[in-house]
Image 1: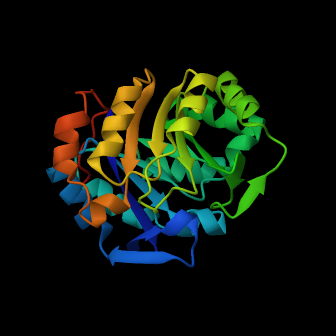
Image 2: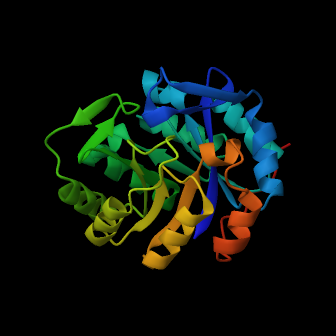
Length: 252
C-alpha cells in the first residue's frame, strides 16, 4: 500500500485539526512546499494536500500554495478542499494536481457524473464518516438520509475509481484507524480505497497489512509524521509495495 503524507493548509501554514475541529488546531510551519520536499526526499510517491480554508468557505483558497508545491517536487499531488464546481476542479488540475478529491458535491449525482466525464480517474471522492453519518462542508455538516452502503454503490455506478475514506472521529487523534469500519466499507465497494485518519504508529500499519484488503491502495498519515511518531522513510520501506504512479514534471 502507498504511504501518503498529508499537508493540511490553513491561513497559509501547515496545520492539523483534531477531529476536523477548526478550533482545535496545531500549527506546524509555514511554507508547505518545504514539507513537500522533505516528504519527497523520504520516498513519498504521492502527497495528499487539503485546503482547509477552501473546505470551510466552499471555494479553493490555496491554489497558489498548490502551484508552489508542484513546482518544488517531482511526485504526484492529490488535492481537495472547496472544489464544488467544474471551474474550481479544473483550476486545481491546471495548478498541477494529478488527482482531486471531491467531498460535499460528490453527493450530487449529476455533478459527479459531469466531473468524471470531464476528468476521468483524476477525480477521487472523499467519503467522510462520523458515527455512521456522512459529513460534508469541511466536516461541519452531516447528511442524515444517505446510507453508507447506498452511497458507496452510487459512487461506483457513477464511475468513481478512488475513494478517500476518513473516520473523522479518529482524524488527528493518534488513536489508531477504525479497522472495523474500514473493513465494512471495503466490502461495500470494489473501487480503490485510501484510508485517512488515526494512524499513530507503525503497528497500525502492520494491522492494516494483516487485513489483506485487496483494493486498499494506500493510507494517508498526518500528525504522526509531524510529531515524529512515525518515520515516513521507515514506513515506506516496510509497508509500501512498488507502484507506478502518474509521472510528474517539475513546472518552471
